[in-house]
Length: 286
Ligand SMILES: [Zn+2]
Image 1 (tube, rainbow, N blue to C red):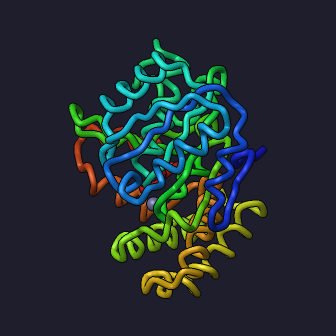
Image 2: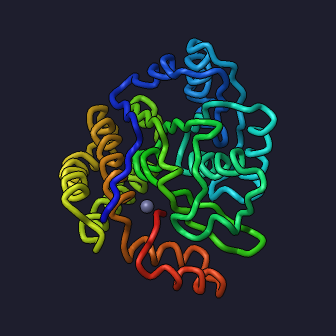
């Protein structure tokens, strides 16, 4: 038996952020990172669209790159106080990953972080809120995946959390947001997406459902990554879609040795190695 899980809705194309106006709900918390979404106006647009949907909106800003367990717990506390029925995460991989983990501790305040480190062992989510993810970079594809990378700085371990419960309900893949990416980020995240598609295709867990997504992602990336780097608008949109297709593939087929090595060399502690040795069948994003 194999399982293939994707978000219920994936909106794509320039300007599709406006779909937020149609989310049915009462309260939304918007989780984001440092300054880029605010500076480019997309944070305000997000808030305004949610208000147009009739929702009360609160923000949780300042999620750091490589988000910490502390940030996750802080966000979960804010959610427990506000009681949103939508969690809307906008930005790069970090704020979206952090929001996914916050979601778990919002719905299960008594859960311990240690409870989540065993892959595919999460409690059932969506008892309090649904999750909408809006990526600003064209690479991690966390808007469609079952993964979130959270760092325990006290232990020096980067935990790749994995469970289909944290696959978002709605993904908004709006190329207008990706157009704001600086060139270097465009290149780095594009190569990340290329690696996701390649590793999903050669993964031992690949299947007829994941291969078409991986292959098409590779074709698009091959044709458009360099053009996207040089600022071609159409290419930026193509890359934003391609990285999402790659994410759909690897969320279900998992990844390979490149991400496995990257994970270990990022945090080469003894504890990290023993943790990952328990999971020789699975490697995870970033
Ligand atoms: Zn990656």
